[in-house]
Image (cartoon, rainbow, N blue to C red):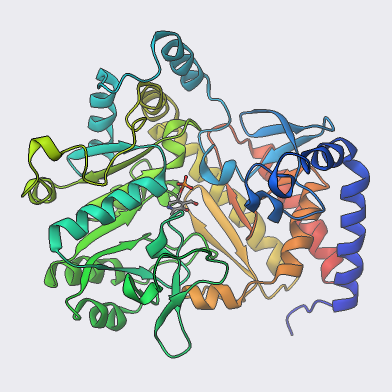
Length: 452
Ligand SMILES: Cc1ncc(COP(=O)(O)O)c(C=O)c1O
């Protein structure tokens, strides 16, 4: 009989942890109070109001895999800016390169040699020869979608149910109960009903993917090789191969988003397992925290994009951003890719990611918790389901906001930050075995109280 959670006990524990959080963070509380006057909901972006606890922590400094808050408390950071700081906070080579570039010119609307070095490095890692740069992974996805529409003359894109690819209108689609494509809850201001732009399909459902592509309306399939934003959902054997084959069969563009799955290896899932997408998007960690994004493509795609576009019109294609490809972002990407997120760093990150997940698995077994832990190289995640799930909807159904609130507060009150909104941990080159052991000890302690 697996362990069970007594609801009264959970309610008592959440209240205790909330109280402890408020008591031990007076400076963050005061800053949050002051912020009500100038920031909507007291935060720079409203999603920051969703952190566990009465207010978010205000950060004063971050270095490597730790940060300090306004109350002078130190934390082990397993969130790492939800991958934006997968390199560790302020890695020395990136700081040096960025500092030098700041003094030499930040943006000139002209290329620098760094752009070539970064393009060559991305080509080496992901196998796609030609690259373009943006300021975010969101923009990389938007641009890739736009190119796919231009190439195919078709309007729709296919995404997976409960995917996340940034703030891209077309991607906030889920499957309705009747199998139609509908807007995701919380998606505000959609320009048109989602079924006009998107077909949502279950992850790992080859038949549904083929049915969507067979409509002849699909410009592109945009997907992560493993879902990472609704809990980790891994592809079943043969699924990614089917995605390649079916997109080719129906002449749709296969866009692989490696922004989070870059945790699998230096070339993400694509480089590690030899995927051959038509386009690839990435962002967040490749600049060590400096805003950046990139999308790569085959020569065939580049040739098709060029058709019908006159040189005089190259600046009006809906693909742009004056600051995209700026010298500062490229200096950051060059240093981060060539000196920080190296093969050697990945060896360490994946070893510790495995140790983190082993610790979680052992604790789950000890306490007979009906949970399991998924692994994605330097990333791991616990989910409130006894087995791995195969679709985004199943992952969503396994979610539990009360438990999330408790877990995150329990960890925060003991100096550990997990990725919010689900229970993910990421390992940086600077994460230590002691950091991982501290999480394992905290996790065991927490399960002891929860399954008492
Ligand atoms: C897979 C994936 N793609 C794209 C993005 C968008 O990144 P950004 O918000 O930096 O544009 C995210 C953000 O979480 C993501 O998880």
